[in-house]
Structure formats: C-alpha cells, structure tokens
Length: 481
Image 1 (cartoon, rainbow, N blue to C red):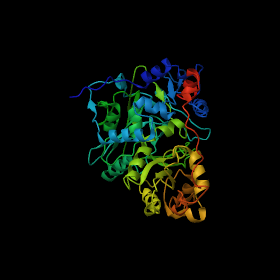
Image 2 (image 1 turned 120 degrees about the vertical axis):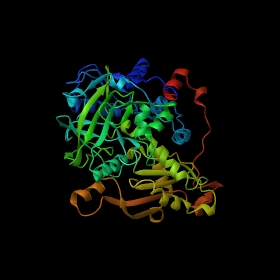
Image 3 (image 1 turned 60 degrees about the horizontal axis):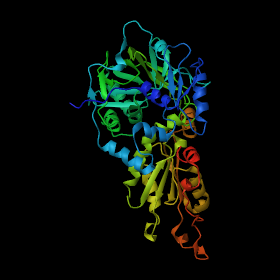
Image 4 (image 1 turned 90 degrees about the vertical axis):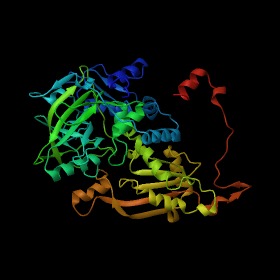
C-alpha cells in the first residue's frame, strides 16, 4: 500500500506563511458575532489580501483562521500548480483525469480528542455570525456523505446553521450530489449520515467544490492534487471516512421523520442575503478534533470564497474547449459571479468560414450548468482574466442591435435575487433569460482599415523588459509580487 505523506493541517500551513511574514495576526480578542467576519471582509478589500489569524475568539478556546485562499497566486502556490492561466487549467485537468484514491489510516490527528455521550458540540467548535442580518450562527464545513444505494462517497461544501442542543440545519440543495444522496435516504426511510469537516487540508477544500461527475470520489482528486493518497480515518459513530488531517469533525445523522427548520438568511456568494427556507435538521452524534485545533472561517462573497471555486473555471474550460478545440482558445468563469454565472469564451475567428461559430459555441456552453446565465465571446487578443479588457471589447466590438442575443428563460440559482424573487412571489419557476454577448469583430469588418492599418487593430507599442530599467528592489516589489 502506498504510504501517505505526513498528515499536516491548516495550522501547520498558517505557520509556514507566518514564518514568511505573510500572515496578519489580530492580537486582541474578537467577537465571532460579526466582528471577526467584518475584519475578514475589510482585509478582502485590500489590493492584496493576506491570510488572517485570530488567536483569541470570544467564548472559545480555539483560534480561527481565514483568507488563506484569497489570492489566486497563493492558492496555486499552496497546491503546487502553475499560475499561468492555461497551464493551471491543464495541470488541474491532469489531476482530475489521474485520481489518486485515499488510503485508510488507523489513527489520525483529527481524532486526538473524541467527544461522545454528554457534550456541547456547538459550544466547543467555533462558529460565526457573518453579517448583521444573518439568521443565526454558522459553520462552513466540507460535508462527507455516502450514496445509500451505490455506496459511493461524496465530498462537498454546504453551510449549516446552529440551532442549539447539538442540532444544525443543513443547507442541502436537491440538485447537488449530497442532495441526491439525501433524497435516496428519504425514499428508503432510513437515517442519513453526514460528517462535517472544519479546517480541512487545502486540497480537500478545493476538491470539495470541484464540479465532478456523479459517482466520483472528490478525495481521489484531492490525492491527485496532493501528489499522494489523502489519508482518511473512520468516524467514531458513523459508517463514513473523513480526512485524517482535519481540525474538527462533527459526526451526525438526519433521522426519520426528517425534521426541518428554517435556515437563513446568510450572505451568499453573490453578496446578497439568501432566501430563508426549510432545511433538514442534523443531530450531532460526536465531535472529534486535534488537540491544538484551529477553526477556518469562510465568509461568502469574499475573494477567499471565490478562489475556492477556481476549479469551476477549469471545468468550464474543459467543457467549452471540447466543443471545438481549434476554434476555442480559452474560457473562464468570472470571479465577480463566484465562478458560476458569467462565462467568457476566447475564440480564434481567422476565416470567413468560422463566422457564426461563436454563437454555436455560446449556445452549447449553457449546457455546462443551469447556473450559467451570460456568455460573452471575445477574440483571441482579449485578456479574458481582465474585466477591463472584456468591458473594452464589449464597448468597441459589439453592436447591440446585431450582436446581443436574448434566449428564453431557463432555471438558475435561487440566490440570484433577480431569479429568486419568483420563488418569494410564487408566480413561476426560479429562472431568468439567458444572454449571449458577441464581442468578437464581425468578419465583414476584419479587413476594414485606413492608411493600411486594420481598423480593429490596437495601437502597438515597443516591447519593453522592465528588468533593464527598474532596480532589483522595485522589480521585486512591483513586478514579481
């Protein structure tokens, strides 16, 4: 059996970045009700967001960390992946296509302390109230479940709202894999087991939010990203395995007759408050944790929240690239929509025969996810990671009367309020019209020009190597950072 790498943890990772002088430590005691999240949000508003560590959190003996993934470059560094956009996607796809199954270990750091019988889970494990308008306090865990029929494991992220008396309301959406697992348990009338993992290893967090086919074990992707099998350990009270490197694990069960409680509101990834709804209630059966555990707080709508979803970008690239590999150069989902709702496709329209293919590709792209609402297509000279470039292309290359295409309404995410409002009013399904923005230069104008220069060619400047002009200190500060 392959031996796993050393079972590290988030605490050790924070120590590495602290040694580099890259972690902001808040020395004073902070309140986990709005104050802690307010500091995380304030740091997210900086041009470069550092990881943050809270050693003293009111009411808890464990520290809290955040913002570790806030910068994409740092997330790539943590995972050991290239930062070049296409190289990153290809490396991530290689990991997805070469899974490394987890390996079982007899004991693990996440079970250095085991609480069963009489215990107060919600008073032991730190939680946060993120916004002034939240419906309660929350965990943002990685959730491990098992298919009651096929037995395959799923790992995802789903928030849970604290109810008291070792009970939490689980935000399980029925279109998700864990939602399908729960529906099968309800059909059978059997208890549904869940393990809530808080403070997972970085590769587990990233794998948990990766769009994977049904029946795929996200922990095998975590192993591929890690470069070695992810060690897992069997739960104390459940028939589930969880990452051995976790900081906290809350074991629990949703039991017939499947009690429900109103969950929400909570600040969602689109920075609006979620619509409260009835969710199943999980009873916590055990808590296990490291001796020196740390909680990890993810605040929705922050760069940290968005960077965890960088795998959506990879999946969208794979999906769209496969439609026409020679025509599609690159593709991405915009961070401003949490890598979900707006797709940018870069194409190479280098002959008259390819005119119109951009519309075919854009139409097909909506099959990627029901959450995708807008697709913008640009030429290959446009940097699809720079929204200023996208705005420029839309403004200078798109004639709205000819190049905007409004499609019929389709279903989307209820937490986009322009669609979710229909659920509140009860007038129709949760959806909105889809939009294609063709910001490519129409072929008939490609040859238009003046003085021998194409009209749609950008002004050209002499290439300049800043190393020849800047001091080493300035080059490091402004270019390599």
